[in-house]
Image (tube, rainbow, N blue to C red):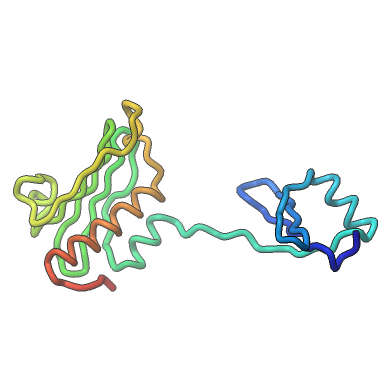
Length: 160
């Protein structure tokens, strides 16, 4: 094969480099890393390096969305307390198999779903303590989605 028949890509995923090649018919396949390097060294393959996607820190994502984050983290439960740009308070809690987000005028309102201006909750996974071990990236996704639903339900439009 020559370089015009396919292209090869080297990607760094997590802490490992992965090699793939795309044949001229559009089919892609993974190659063992050593085989891939040997093919490059012998001139059989062209190299194309792609930068890894760098995930934005969950706390930074929330701050960039205009939230003032007081707490974010924990383990069984995972919790977040924050203030929205409009001054309302947000409380997130994930424990057991469920997560909850509540938004209220005060911190007390946001902690109590019954008195919150807006609340949403859902099952996370089937494992007994899975929600309490939720990754912070997932927490940020849920919080930002809940805020979008809150704004739609209250007619406030998008945040920051």
